[in-house]
Structure formats: C-alpha cells, structure tokens
Image (cartoon, rainbow, N blue to C red):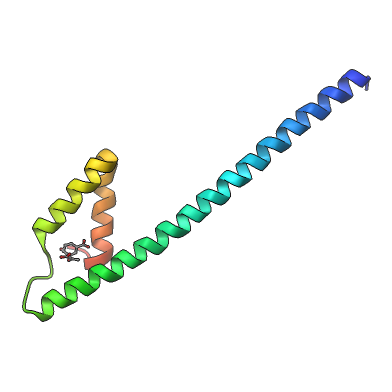
Length: 98
Ligand SMILES: C=C(O[C@@H]1C=C(C(=O)O)C=C[C@H]1O)C(=O)O
C-alpha cells in the first residue's frame, strides 16, 4: 500500500470507530429509557389495580369510563394517533381486558 492509501484506510477506520462509539452511547441511553418506561409501566399497572380494588370494595364499578376517555384524549393529544393504542394497552395493563 502507498502512504496515501494507508492514511485513507486509517481515517476511514477512525470514522467507523467514532460511529460505532456514538451508536453504542445512543443505545445505552435507549436501554436506560426502556428500563425506565418498563418500571413506570409496571408501577402504573399496580396503582391502577389498587384504585380499581378500592372502588370495588366501596361497591363501585370496575371501570371509570369518563376517566378512561380523559386518559385516551391526553395520550392522543400528546402522541397523535399512535397514542390511542398505547393508552388502551396502559389501561388494559391496570384494569385487565374489557
Ligand atoms: C385506575 C382507575 O380505574 C380504572 C383504570 C384506569 C387507569 O388505568 O388509568 C382508569 C379508569 C378506570 O377504568 C381509576 O379510576 O383511576
């Protein structure tokens, strides 16, 4: 290889190494976010179950539909159309399937 070719190869591999380092850092942050989301998802389901159990113990209903509508509206306002199925899964995780 000529000196020029060696320099080019070294700079390509340095750029590749920088990209790999950046991807690794971004993935570490993604993993941390996923861990936080999973923790919050499970906490939400637990709290939702407690509210439902308290309402039923008071002779109330398993569902509070006005509250569910408000939650669906909030997710849709924040996340657009994708927010609706996400909210439905969050509700289901807490109070079970309809
Ligand atoms: C937790 C509750 O009970 C149910 C579960 C909800 C939820 O997971 O957010 C919302 C409404 C109810 O159908 C509540 O009334 O707040």
